[in-house]
Image (tube, rainbow, N blue to C red):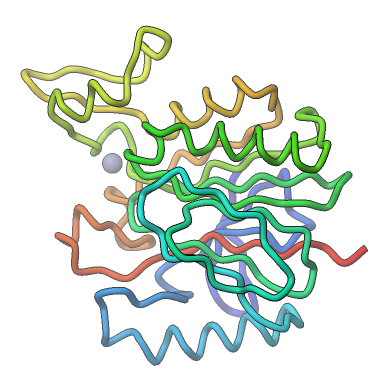
Length: 244
Ligand SMILES: [Zn+2]
Protein backbone atom coordinates (compact mmCIF):
# COMPACT_ATOMS: atom_id res chain seq x y z
CA UNK A 1 0.00 0.00 0.00
CA UNK A 2 1.25 3.47 -0.90
CA UNK A 3 0.99 6.34 1.56
CA UNK A 4 2.16 9.93 1.78
CA UNK A 5 4.82 10.53 4.39
CA UNK A 6 6.74 13.45 5.75
CA UNK A 7 10.49 13.58 5.07
CA UNK A 8 11.75 16.29 7.43
CA UNK A 9 8.89 18.56 6.39
CA UNK A 10 8.68 17.52 2.70
CA UNK A 11 5.90 15.43 1.21
CA UNK A 12 7.02 12.06 -0.16
CA UNK A 13 5.25 8.88 -1.27
CA UNK A 14 6.24 5.57 0.29
CA UNK A 15 5.14 1.94 0.16
CA UNK A 16 4.37 -0.20 3.19
CA UNK A 17 6.54 -2.91 1.60
CA UNK A 18 9.64 -0.73 2.09
CA UNK A 19 8.51 1.54 4.92
CA UNK A 20 11.72 1.03 6.92
CA UNK A 21 13.93 1.80 3.94
CA UNK A 22 15.07 5.02 2.30
CA UNK A 23 13.12 4.21 -0.85
CA UNK A 24 10.46 6.69 -1.93
CA UNK A 25 9.01 8.95 -4.60
CA UNK A 26 9.26 12.70 -4.30
CA UNK A 27 6.49 15.23 -5.02
CA UNK A 28 6.27 18.84 -6.18
CA UNK A 29 7.12 19.81 -2.63
CA UNK A 30 10.49 18.09 -2.90
CA UNK A 31 11.77 18.71 -6.41
CA UNK A 32 15.28 17.36 -7.10
CA UNK A 33 15.42 17.92 -10.87
CA UNK A 34 14.09 21.09 -12.46
CA UNK A 35 14.33 19.96 -16.14
CA UNK A 36 12.49 22.64 -18.14
CA UNK A 37 11.44 24.64 -15.11
CA UNK A 38 14.50 26.82 -14.68
CA UNK A 39 12.64 28.81 -12.02
CA UNK A 40 12.91 25.70 -9.80
CA UNK A 41 16.64 25.20 -10.33
CA UNK A 42 17.75 26.76 -7.08
CA UNK A 43 15.07 24.94 -5.10
CA UNK A 44 16.16 21.63 -6.65
CA UNK A 45 19.82 22.31 -5.78
CA UNK A 46 18.89 23.12 -2.19
CA UNK A 47 16.72 19.99 -1.94
CA UNK A 48 19.49 17.76 -3.29
CA UNK A 49 21.91 18.97 -0.65
CA UNK A 50 19.17 18.59 1.98
CA UNK A 51 18.62 14.97 0.90
CA UNK A 52 22.35 14.18 1.03
CA UNK A 53 22.58 15.65 4.53
CA UNK A 54 19.49 13.89 5.90
CA UNK A 55 20.50 10.49 4.52
CA UNK A 56 24.20 10.98 5.36
CA UNK A 57 25.16 10.12 1.80
CA UNK A 58 28.31 11.02 -0.11
CA UNK A 59 26.63 11.68 -3.44
CA UNK A 60 24.09 10.72 -6.06
CA UNK A 61 24.04 8.04 -8.70
CA UNK A 62 21.95 9.10 -11.65
CA UNK A 63 21.62 8.86 -15.42
CA UNK A 64 20.79 10.63 -18.63
CA UNK A 65 17.52 8.90 -19.40
CA UNK A 66 16.68 8.32 -23.06
CA UNK A 67 13.70 5.90 -23.06
CA UNK A 68 15.99 2.98 -23.84
CA UNK A 69 16.37 -0.49 -22.34
CA UNK A 70 19.98 0.20 -21.34
CA UNK A 71 20.68 -1.10 -17.83
CA UNK A 72 23.85 -0.36 -15.87
CA UNK A 73 25.24 -1.96 -12.74
CA UNK A 74 26.72 0.88 -10.73
CA UNK A 75 30.51 0.96 -10.41
CA UNK A 76 32.23 2.38 -7.38
CA UNK A 77 34.02 5.18 -9.19
CA UNK A 78 31.19 6.27 -11.47
CA UNK A 79 28.15 8.30 -10.47
CA UNK A 80 26.66 9.41 -13.80
CA UNK A 81 25.50 7.02 -16.51
CA UNK A 82 24.92 8.29 -20.03
CA UNK A 83 21.99 6.93 -22.04
CA UNK A 84 20.75 4.66 -19.27
CA UNK A 85 17.22 3.96 -18.02
CA UNK A 86 17.85 1.48 -15.22
CA UNK A 87 20.48 1.35 -12.50
CA UNK A 88 21.38 -1.54 -10.20
CA UNK A 89 23.39 -0.84 -7.06
CA UNK A 90 24.53 -2.27 -3.74
CA UNK A 91 26.38 0.90 -2.70
CA UNK A 92 25.09 2.17 0.68
CA UNK A 93 27.00 5.47 0.49
CA UNK A 94 25.22 7.02 -2.49
CA UNK A 95 21.60 7.76 -3.37
CA UNK A 96 20.20 6.47 -6.64
CA UNK A 97 17.86 8.94 -8.33
CA UNK A 98 15.93 8.73 -11.60
CA UNK A 99 13.42 11.32 -12.72
CA UNK A 100 9.88 11.28 -14.08
CA UNK A 101 6.95 13.30 -15.32
CA UNK A 102 4.24 10.73 -16.29
CA UNK A 103 6.64 7.84 -17.08
CA UNK A 104 6.43 4.80 -14.85
CA UNK A 105 8.99 4.61 -12.01
CA UNK A 106 9.87 1.15 -10.77
CA UNK A 107 11.98 0.28 -7.73
CA UNK A 108 13.23 -3.27 -7.09
CA UNK A 109 14.78 -4.15 -3.75
CA UNK A 110 16.03 -7.37 -2.23
CA UNK A 111 16.30 -6.90 1.52
CA UNK A 112 18.07 -10.23 1.85
CA UNK A 113 20.79 -9.33 -0.65
CA UNK A 114 20.66 -5.57 0.00
CA UNK A 115 20.68 -4.76 -3.70
CA UNK A 116 18.29 -2.44 -5.49
CA UNK A 117 17.35 -1.25 -8.95
CA UNK A 118 15.62 1.89 -10.18
CA UNK A 119 13.90 1.83 -13.56
CA UNK A 120 12.53 4.53 -15.87
CA UNK A 121 9.76 2.94 -17.91
CA UNK A 122 7.94 5.34 -20.16
CA UNK A 123 5.85 3.79 -22.89
CA UNK A 124 8.96 3.26 -25.02
CA UNK A 125 10.85 1.61 -22.16
CA UNK A 126 7.78 -0.46 -21.35
CA UNK A 127 7.56 -1.56 -24.98
CA UNK A 128 11.23 -2.59 -24.77
CA UNK A 129 10.53 -4.61 -21.58
CA UNK A 130 12.99 -2.67 -19.47
CA UNK A 131 11.39 -3.72 -16.16
CA UNK A 132 11.53 -7.38 -17.13
CA UNK A 133 15.12 -7.11 -18.36
CA UNK A 134 16.27 -5.30 -15.21
CA UNK A 135 14.67 -7.89 -12.95
CA UNK A 136 16.31 -10.74 -14.89
CA UNK A 137 19.70 -9.00 -14.89
CA UNK A 138 19.51 -8.39 -11.15
CA UNK A 139 18.61 -12.04 -10.54
CA UNK A 140 21.30 -13.42 -12.84
CA UNK A 141 24.23 -11.12 -12.05
CA UNK A 142 23.77 -11.19 -8.27
CA UNK A 143 22.23 -14.62 -7.84
CA UNK A 144 19.06 -13.17 -6.35
CA UNK A 145 15.89 -15.21 -6.02
CA UNK A 146 12.79 -13.48 -7.41
CA UNK A 147 10.84 -14.29 -4.24
CA UNK A 148 13.24 -12.01 -2.36
CA UNK A 149 12.60 -9.02 -4.62
CA UNK A 150 10.08 -6.38 -3.63
CA UNK A 151 8.79 -4.24 -6.48
CA UNK A 152 7.25 -0.79 -6.25
CA UNK A 153 5.48 0.61 -9.29
CA UNK A 154 5.16 4.29 -8.47
CA UNK A 155 3.01 7.23 -9.56
CA UNK A 156 2.66 7.52 -13.34
CA UNK A 157 0.14 8.53 -15.95
CA UNK A 158 -2.86 6.23 -15.54
CA UNK A 159 -5.07 4.38 -17.96
CA UNK A 160 -7.55 7.23 -17.46
CA UNK A 161 -5.22 9.70 -19.20
CA UNK A 162 -2.69 7.77 -21.30
CA UNK A 163 -4.46 8.19 -24.62
CA UNK A 164 -2.65 6.81 -27.65
CA UNK A 165 -3.15 6.05 -31.29
CA UNK A 166 -2.86 2.67 -32.98
CA UNK A 167 0.91 3.06 -33.58
CA UNK A 168 1.79 3.21 -29.86
CA UNK A 169 -0.88 0.68 -28.96
CA UNK A 170 0.54 -1.88 -31.38
CA UNK A 171 4.01 -1.55 -29.82
CA UNK A 172 2.71 -2.06 -26.29
CA UNK A 173 -0.11 -4.53 -26.38
CA UNK A 174 0.11 -8.10 -27.58
CA UNK A 175 -2.20 -11.04 -27.18
CA UNK A 176 -0.85 -11.75 -23.68
CA UNK A 177 -1.81 -8.33 -22.40
CA UNK A 178 -5.30 -7.87 -23.81
CA UNK A 179 -6.75 -6.67 -20.49
CA UNK A 180 -4.53 -3.59 -20.18
CA UNK A 181 -6.44 -1.18 -22.39
CA UNK A 182 -9.78 0.36 -23.25
CA UNK A 183 -10.67 1.49 -26.75
CA UNK A 184 -12.81 4.58 -27.28
CA UNK A 185 -13.37 5.52 -30.91
CA UNK A 186 -9.98 5.30 -32.60
CA UNK A 187 -8.09 6.03 -29.35
CA UNK A 188 -6.58 3.52 -26.95
CA UNK A 189 -6.22 4.07 -23.21
CA UNK A 190 -3.39 1.89 -21.94
CA UNK A 191 -2.45 0.89 -18.39
CA UNK A 192 1.36 1.17 -18.38
CA UNK A 193 1.63 0.33 -14.69
CA UNK A 194 -0.22 -2.94 -15.20
CA UNK A 195 1.99 -3.80 -18.20
CA UNK A 196 5.06 -3.30 -16.01
CA UNK A 197 3.48 -5.41 -13.27
CA UNK A 198 2.97 -8.25 -15.76
CA UNK A 199 6.59 -7.96 -16.89
CA UNK A 200 7.82 -8.27 -13.31
CA UNK A 201 5.46 -11.16 -12.51
CA UNK A 202 6.78 -12.83 -15.61
CA UNK A 203 10.25 -12.90 -14.01
CA UNK A 204 8.96 -14.55 -10.84
CA UNK A 205 8.44 -11.48 -8.63
CA UNK A 206 5.31 -11.82 -6.52
CA UNK A 207 5.67 -9.03 -3.99
CA UNK A 208 4.53 -6.02 -6.03
CA UNK A 209 2.98 -2.79 -4.79
CA UNK A 210 1.32 -0.74 -7.50
CA UNK A 211 0.47 2.93 -7.00
CA UNK A 212 -3.04 3.99 -8.07
CA UNK A 213 -2.15 7.64 -8.48
CA UNK A 214 -2.25 9.16 -11.94
CA UNK A 215 0.27 11.96 -12.39
CA UNK A 216 -1.91 13.71 -14.99
CA UNK A 217 -5.01 13.68 -12.72
CA UNK A 218 -2.89 14.61 -9.69
CA UNK A 219 -0.67 17.23 -11.28
CA UNK A 220 -1.12 19.34 -8.14
CA UNK A 221 1.13 16.79 -6.36
CA UNK A 222 3.24 15.29 -9.15
CA UNK A 223 4.73 16.65 -12.37
CA UNK A 224 2.93 15.76 -15.59
CA UNK A 225 4.66 16.15 -18.93
CA UNK A 226 1.42 15.74 -20.86
CA UNK A 227 -0.71 18.02 -18.69
CA UNK A 228 1.96 20.73 -18.60
CA UNK A 229 2.69 20.35 -22.31
CA UNK A 230 6.35 19.49 -21.83
CA UNK A 231 7.29 22.49 -19.70
CA UNK A 232 7.64 20.84 -16.34
CA UNK A 233 10.09 19.65 -13.71
CA UNK A 234 10.44 16.07 -12.48
CA UNK A 235 9.54 14.07 -9.42
CA UNK A 236 12.05 11.37 -8.56
CA UNK A 237 12.45 7.82 -7.41
CA UNK A 238 14.95 7.84 -4.56
CA UNK A 239 16.74 4.72 -3.32
CA UNK A 240 19.45 4.43 -0.76
CA UNK A 241 20.74 0.98 0.14
CA UNK A 242 20.59 0.22 3.84
CA UNK A 243 23.95 0.06 5.59
CA UNK A 244 24.65 -3.52 6.65
ZN1 LIG B 1 -5.57 10.25 -15.00
